Image 1 (cartoon, rainbow, N blue to C red):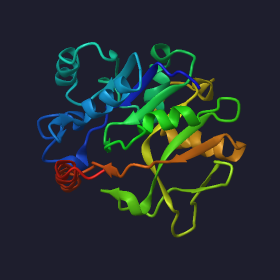
Image 2 (cartoon, rainbow, N blue to C red):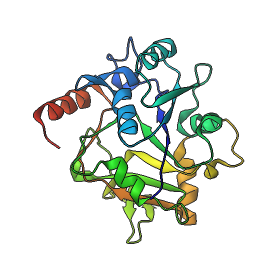
Image 3 (spheres, one colour):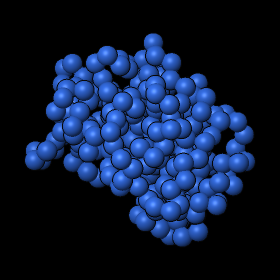
Length: 240
């Protein structure tokens, strides 16, 4: 089993869909169930043994810095400062590469929330990782077990775990659940520029190096105020 000691929380977004809750704070500091979205992500890292987390920041950067400074040391946090230019998910990771190291890392969006069952989803993802076959392993949410996601699905899952994009097909059974493992080698030769991680994933899909793992927990995409309220109600109810 691979031991993964580094993670990255993608927290630099503007949070425009979360307004008015983001009028005075970044989306990462919106609270759900008594904890900020950022803390949900970082606490999952800590519970799975991640020792160092990189957090990229842009919107309300000083407020993010203050919150991070007050968290304690589990995990230790290093900041990738994008206050000068927002780089999206792919560019943000390329800029953070010097902080991430050369081994596989966890990556999570801060708007992905769930309550783990018997086996934590991060542990399941780590146990399924095979760096000889995979460059990226995405956590997937079955569409019928989601909250706050109104899309038509992202992927079809092959029998061997490889992923096939929905493309022009009207619907796919799985959505990307906002968390994955990636080997930094996929960014070799990439310059710091503004681009989405999906650009990398499309390439890896054609190479047979993009894999997925369906999650067991109920997935909540907390992308707007209504989804935030619905997620908070579900957490309060004790539902998994």
